[in-house]
Amino acid sequence: MNDDARLTQLEAQLHGIQTEVEFLRRALRATCELHARESAAARIDQMTGCMTRAKFEEIAGTVRGTFAVIMIDLDHFKQINDTDGHQRGDFVLQRIGQLLRDNCREDDIVARYGGEEFIVLLQRADLRRAEDWARRFRKTLEQENLAHPSQQRVTASAGCAATMGGKEMSQVIGAADAARVPSEGRRSRSRRRIGG
Picture 1 (tube, one colour):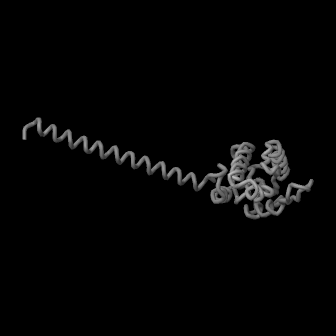
Picture 2 (cartoon, rainbow, N blue to C red):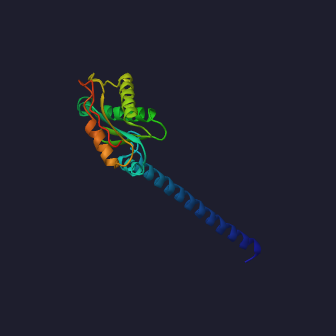
């Protein structure tokens, strides 16, 4: 085999290797992107854009010091799905998720806790700050006017609890959940404070 033939053969082999390397690079990139999407899906609720409950519980377990928790439940949400359809219900959940994220500080934590329930963890906050936040959020929700075609206003119930430390996160969450009362027909809400 002469030098020109050998050079042509080596160039062909090099091209084959380059093609294989490019294929492997693309496959690796696609695998990394898939892993990133799956990882994000485990952290972020796809419907609302809020953190998932599992990720919230993982992060919340590391919170120390003074903090407050607000449990939020959309009132009569099932009626929205039953009357106006699940697409409308999905829209309401998406918008609520955006409103919650927009009304929090960067270091606060917002998660979809289940169905139409959300949880907000305000770091370095006491019960009064949590109650003020809940009132402001409910006003924001009223101003948003998410009334659906059946004309029922979208409202939310909120319960607040706080601690100065030393209590388990689950106790604070339980107290906030117990403090929730339906927003309609009630002027005052039950309140519970844990810690001191």
